[in-house]
Amino acid sequence: MVKMSLDAIQVMSGQVKELKVSPSSNGDTRGSWEGKEEFDPNQLELTAKPKPVTGRRARKVEGAVFFPKPENAVTVAVSSRVLFRTEREQKVFEQKGVEEYLRYQIEHENEPFAPGPAFPFVKALDAVNTRLRELYPQSEELFDIVLVTYNHAHVGIRLINTINHHNLFIERFCMTGGSSPIGYLKAWHTNLYLSADAEKVREALAEGIAAATMFMPEKLTEVSESQLRVAFDGDAVLFSDESERIFKTHGLDKFFEHEKENEDRLLDHGPLKGFLEALGKLQKKFYAKGQRLDCPIRTYLVTARSAASSGIRALKTLRAWGLEIDEALFLAGAPKGPMLEKIRPHIYFDDQMFHVEGAAEMGTVAAHVPYGIAQKYNSQQKMSSGK
Image 1 (spheres, rainbow, N blue to C red):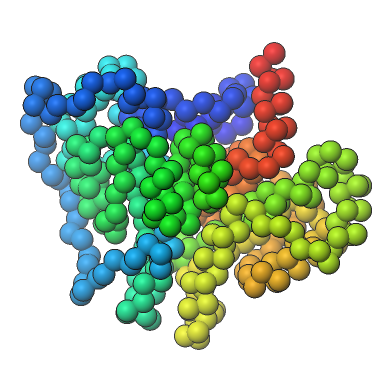
Image 2: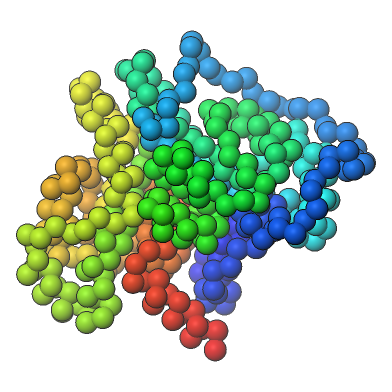
């Protein structure tokens, strides 16, 4: 069983323990800041001055680059804990408390964080924006990245230095100092929220915001730097969990029967349908310029459904929604990991931890969408494994 970091899950002896998010140095748990005294930077008594910046790269911004209005952009909100690796800082916070943590961050503010699991995904978004700006110089239909963190504002200096070092184009920050970010996500018109905090992901989903919990596999598959590849599960991700409920409650035969009887009735939308829709809208801008075969966005459906027995309803639903999926893989229950290894997506979304772990074993960055009936069964399995 693969070991995935970020403390979003723990894998021990092949058994997945209950999802618990430890208080984070980059603060994705509100309780880590509650009850703390107000931070006074003058009381830190720094033992060392911040080290000078080393290796900072110049920002490659040419011409008058404008920032799109949130309502016009495809807004992706990314937690600092999944964009960067902050395990060392987390240990300082957990072992020595908030004041030592803040002192440590200031003393190391010119040392950039290493890339986290969302880093290649964000770089790919930026690559798509570069192509879009070449074709549509005045258009605001772009990806817009918002960095979200529970951190105190003073830690923002290190985050900015890190962003400049890695030459990321991120200008919008949301540093909440311990408050929930969900209200801000709605104000940003967020199309997707990625975090290491499973509880906050559930809160976002409850508010109608597409969201997923990200994990860092021990090994990483190399991904494309010029084409954004996003893979989705079907039921309880793009679609509702209606069919999954039939399968979980009545078994596979009843599921096939239900799908055959309802193949002309559309599935309801799932939590990630809107994000696929947003990707499709940007894809069509490339198609309009004759670049369908050279489009820098490619989407995949990777589902455990069988093609002949239950695939028609899924495909008819996507067609009725006006959504084109570039590749559809109906695996009929076969493991998804090997297929994802061939696809090499920047991110894969699934509602079942079993498939998330299988993807991670093969080096794919996978994100868990805690939505639908499968979460009830996941909870029951965790309770059983804990006895």
